[in-house]
Image 1 (cartoon, rainbow, N blue to C red):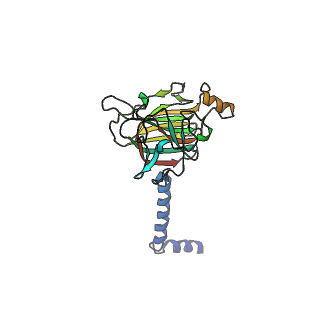
Image 2 (image 1 turned 180 degrees about the horizontal axis):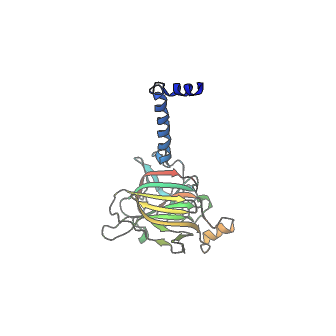
Image 3 (image 1 turned 135 degrees about the horizontal axis):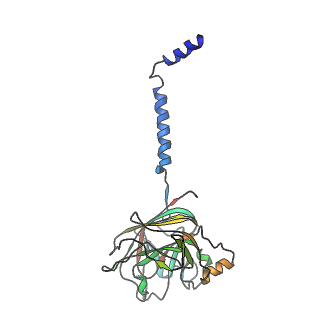
Length: 276
């Protein structure tokens, strides 16, 4: 009987007595749900908007960090590949690399092409740049090597008339799997629109190590592929394999190109993803 009276006393308590505590618990739960829903995503900028700190440079025929003719530079908060100091391109292919490797992430880049192509540049180099990922280190490249062994999200601009997709996939020294089949073709077109003129375009590549990779242009998926790997038929990739590298690529450096046409990058952001 005493037990029943005790229980009755508990439930007869003022119903508003515990309202502040309930409100607090509700707020904590809501905050937890918000974090789990992705609001806690932390994008980091790989480019500080001031200088090239955190980046390494390699040009064909030049030593590491010899920034040939001041090609890569920062002006007005924008990273540029510029050709105003060139008389002729002379096949000086250049790349600027992050100083650390990445494996699982989303990379978001805002880019545009500017001005005229450098004299002597290859025909295919017109309004052409690229995001190289899972790249070998610049230190490991041959002095006269033109492109790092990597997977490339090819960035192309239109000529004002013809269709020309961007967000394509190119594979210098590598291969990828598309729809379950190993593809050895060097460049494969995406389903993107054509972007003429000097307009800014947002490119994203979502990379899951050696798993699925997704290319997006202005938020739209334009290419999906997986299982990036070294190409045993390529001279530089074969050298890497002979030195003990894994056939399958799951991490590497990120690089941008200088292939004879002026390019600007005003945002380079990365979101680390958890391994699956």
